[in-house]
Length: 414
Image (cartoon, rainbow, N blue to C red; front, side):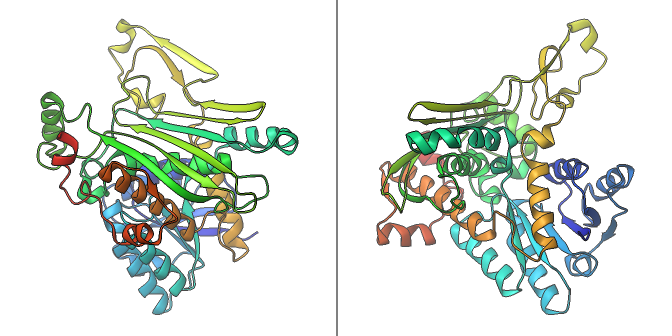
């Protein structure tokens, strides 16, 4: 298998996490990085860990001429413009095999659809990075339960939750630049994970058809005066004027197009989980069997007392989004593998090496964006939406939530 030379556009948190995951994947190297904040540090990390000797480039076009695939890991509000530059570079002769985009594919359905059209217009293979569908803890459980499914029937309910105390970067808190709040940021994970758990064996990731959605968006912690001030002082984001939701929950109903069976996916996500750190929790219920995942249950725990903690306070050394550096701490020896990052890179490398799309394509990413926006619309309208109704479907295509427009104050404070 040939080595896939990757170029990263984006050198922040997710780029670093995925670079760490690359250590566990063969036949790929980080060859180029778009020169922006953090690029030099990321290049040094890659070189120190045997992942290549990446060169820094001042333009996306120049980067495209030195790699096999480009990974878009830049902030949400930059991605469409980056994709346009990649497509232009291919038209001008860059010999790229494929393009990768971290979730979400777009802040709106219109943006996500443009991403698909640009990639396909440039004849690029695509990989949509939704890491939770690659988590071994989920997929191993599903494999274990396939015999039971054949005898008893498929899952009928899945629940997925992702929570932590809030994002790292100012743009993530800004609903206009990010595209919303926690539903846009993490609800996309939970909706995708529910659908994945509910999908029957042997069927593709787009098999189940969404037919209805109901949802709520709320501002529970970060809308309080004390925490609004904290956000403004730390990130320069004003949640009195342009708030985003810090809590969302809802239910999507899916239909099996072959049997007509209806199944439910329940998602809950928040930016106010002030406990150990990032928690991903999922369960699936079938007739006579079940699975359950909680990433805060670790095979490793450590304890740090107050006196011992005084000298070092690197909370995230133990766990992503950790809020404590003392007490009884859950520690994950390999978060990059736990969350599915290594597996999604491996899937991309194998696919692009064969000149094929990854398991999750940009078209799949468009579907997830569509469901997230449908959930926002259901929350705004305070009703269950019929996702089979042509009028509703057309509205979702053009829809941009009030929160993403910076007009969420009336919605979230009423």
